[in-house]
Length: 187
Image (cartoon, rainbow, N blue to C red; front, side):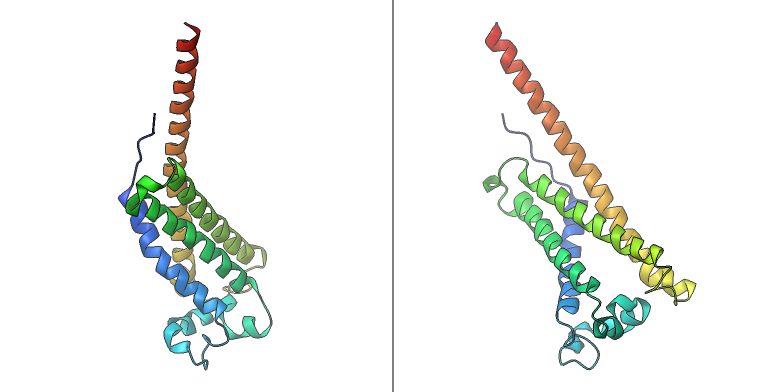
């Protein structure tokens, strides 16, 4: 018996809104030096000129120093985005061609990767005593770094909770069906 497929508008909306942001962010990091101020493609990533002054990981100096953290995180951004878009396809575009339970598992995996990367990124700042963001005013630190990172922790955590709970419920239901089938065969 197939499990009922559940979709949540808020999860789909989060994945839909964040996918282009994550691709744009990854593009900025992976296209450096062309995306940096003075680069021929900088016009497309102009807001990063300000952000590079807030978070030095995104700045010119980090690139010139060979700091690869932003580019490494960008690769994870692309993998997360692929998983999140696969969830959207599996729940809204061609749900019938996805195996039952695959889309929630893929969405859960994408959210887990986002949460893990954000915690790693934030922890790095904690353990290096704010080496990339500690120079900011309290307002700039909150508005441009803390608040956005908190959102990248809260939403993926909620997605993991919701999709993980649904998957566990499906596992319990399937276990119950198997047990029932075994009991009826013994009778």
